[in-house]
Image (tube, rainbow, N blue to C red; front, side, top):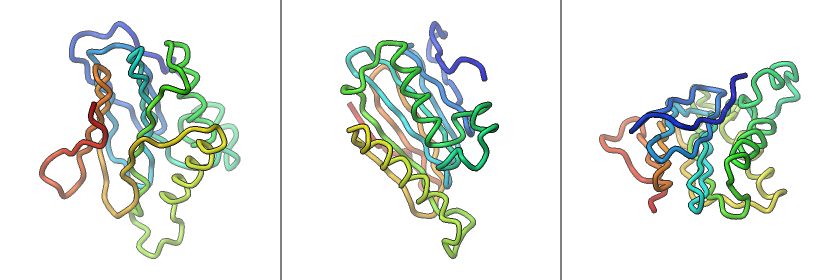
Amino acid sequence: MPSPTLAGLGLEQKVIIGIAELAVSNNTSATLTTYSLGSCLGITIYDPVVRVGGLLHIMLPDSRIDSAKAAAQPAMFVDSGVPALFRAAYKLGADKHRVQICIAGGAQIMDDGGYFNIGKRNYDALTKMLNEHGLRIHAEQVGGMVNRTMYLNLANGDIRLKISGKPQETYLCKS
């Protein structure tokens, strides 16, 4: 997996984070973006003191279902992706006690009966992990039956969402 740390990008750079990917940067000209958060979760962390932020697009809660896949692509799973996100942010000076954590996604897409309920399972795994480490979620928009696109502006930590079916973006976090 290529390094998830991005630095020295050009002006007003939009960085796209795909499914099961993550990126961390201290470039205040960058906006980290991930599309199509259905049952997946978009997890952002942002340290306003050093202006380091990261975005993770996870698919599944538990890497034990495929340890080889987790080793090759840790951002696929909550239990391997979240630690990787924090480690990458720490390398750029972020502090665990200053980071603001925001999440979006966790919807019930293409599972009308809630049989698999991957979105809820992702959310439950994430909140359990954060609680175990004494971390809290600053803001969230999860659940429902809609896809979301998430944007993290590294200049100020603002997080915007584009929600399918809604004409305008909304702020999840605003500095």
